[in-house]
Amino acid sequence: MTIKLVVLYTQPNDGDVFDEHYLGVHAPLVEKIPGLQRFEGARIVAAPDGGEQTYFRIAELYFSDLAALQAALVSDEGQATSGDFQQIAPPGSRMFIANVDD
Image (cartoon, rainbow, N blue to C red; front, side, top):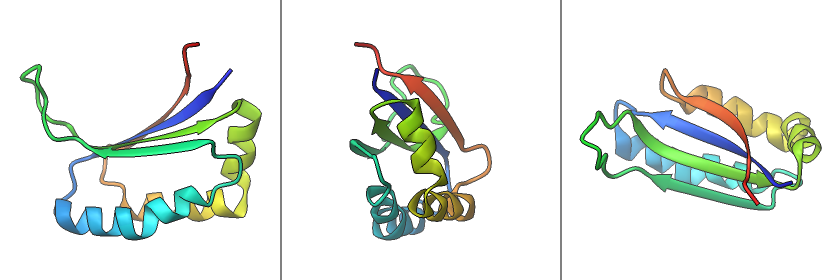
């Protein structure tokens, strides 16, 4: 069963500065994580339900299973990515682990 780590970033103080670091530093760190099958990042541009646009960016990191995700998180590359997340994530940003429906 495929599993993914879903990261929701709240609104930063300066979206352009955030994106410059995210795309130039953080995403390249993510792509080096061992066991990563696929990585998708996207900037949220609208909330069509009319609600508050709480989140600025979403990232989805796919792994073959929970063991692969856990190994990735404790790897040197995973730790470097996690450390950078702690530096750049605006308050209220969240991470979730999800089973991908087959």
